[in-house]
Length: 295
Ligand SMILES: *[C@@H]1O[C@H](CO)[C@@H](O)[C@H](O)[C@H]1NC(C)=O
Ligand SMILES: *[C@@H]1O[C@H](CO)[C@@H](O)[C@H](O)[C@H]1NC(C)=O
Ligand SMILES: *[C@@H]1O[C@H](CO)[C@@H](O)[C@H](O)[C@H]1NC(C)=O
Image (cartoon, rainbow, N blue to C red; front, side):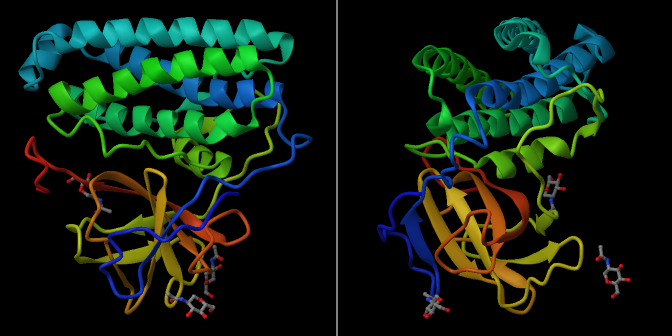
């Protein structure tokens, strides 16, 4: 883990920000093959998301639901990219490659699919960013970076012209630790082939933060009877983490929040890693317009 530089926008009482890179692990627990299979976990999920929605919804369905005439064709291209990426990663890993699982996606219409695609494509970018530090083979690193930059374009295109949200959240995208990103992906996975390799990742009890504007209080709840009162919510935004204490069942969304932040519950006010996280991961979305004004 890296640094603890205090940075700006701690205008909130009790909020602390720091530059935090997800916790480092020893290379014995996560080798390059496991990392490729970790990437395949997300790629298989996205592949199923796009191909499933495209087989469910026609061009007319997209247009009748208010989506642009040009959007479905682009999703066809994205879906083809996913198949290509899954093919490349699978052939690189070989016989122990992670196979596709069964998934349940909560979309009910083309527009709810595009909202979900924005969320999941953003999580995949965060997963690649968080995992990058563990890659040892430089060729894999180039491949992963090449995939990552394409996926960031997908995510930005889905967010902005399609969903009319902001294409980015700030100068830095947010890396998520292996367990944090996996927790977000796992909610859509209903079962996997028993032959799939097991990965050194696990999920947290879920955390829910009610919708609220930046600077406003929002209700916090955690699954599995995890105590929230007096604990901290760590908001990951770009390379910064802001800790805010839960008081009266609520947390104040950091006033500087822009775009997507990912939030976890911690029992520490200065460290958010697997030794302190007790629940997660909530996605906090604070849209802002083309003038940078929060909506
Ligand atoms: C926040 O609002 C969105 C869009 O209206 C909704 O889908 C989501 O369930 C809400 N989340 C919470 C935690 O209330
Ligand atoms: C939560 O607490 C209740 C009451 O103590 C208990 O019955 C239940 O099993 C607990 N659930 C979990 C997931 O621990
Ligand atoms: C963080 O926690 C430590 C240890 O409990 C405490 O001494 C410190 O005052 C806390 N800092 C903030 C900003 O809440």
